[in-house]
Every structure is written in C-alpha cells, then in structure tokens.
Length: 152
Image (cartoon, rainbow, N blue to C red):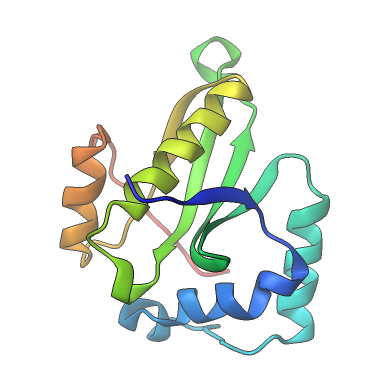
C-alpha cells in the first residue's frame, strides 16, 4: 500500500477536492457540475462539515491531497435497526491511479464505518464505469440491487 494518510477535509482542501471531482468525463456531463468554489459549494461543504452523519475524507500523500470520498452514516429500521454507510464521490488523482490509493481509501472508509456501528456499506456507480465496477468487486462489493435516480 502507498504511504498515505486519511483525514477529514478542511475548507482549504476544497479547491483540490473540486479538481479531483472535475477530472472525470462522466461528472462533467452531469447537470450542476462545477469546478468553481461557488457559494452553494461552500454551503454544501459547511453543511457536510457540521453534520455528524457525514464525513468528507481526503487522502494525503507527501503533503498533497490526492484522493477523496464522502461517507454518510444512515440509521435505519430494516435489518434490525442496522446502521449502514453510503459512499459517494470516490476519486483518486488521475496520475496516481493504479497504485492502490483507492483501495487504501476504501479500506479506511470501511474501518470508519465499522467504528460507527455500521453493518453494511453501499454505493452506487454509473453503469458506464466498468473499471470502477471491477475495482469495487475486488474489494468485496456485490452488485446485489438495481439502483434508480430521478432529478427533482
């Protein structure tokens, strides 16, 4: 595994996080895509930062942010009241992909989720992300459900 540390994102990390999220053709094709540190993006960060059920995590290597993900803890009544963790917006800097940074990031996220009492981690991934599907399968994720989304 690469020498990388994981921590909660700070406001100063936002420009780098936005660049990581922007370095993605699928994300760029979506409505609402932005690389700008707009007031709405800053407000979203502030809301995430203040919510104890959300963590915006960054991976740092040699003092640089090189990876990120959002982790949301969801209480629920199904499965005997089991908490679950939802992973969103997983990104690794393009020039560092293939070095197991994403794996280390996801292992860290799973450890965080276990520590918060979660019994399940779930995610959605765009059907066009074939490499991501292989990546998640290698980590033990199973395509057990069909996901659906609808703009509001």
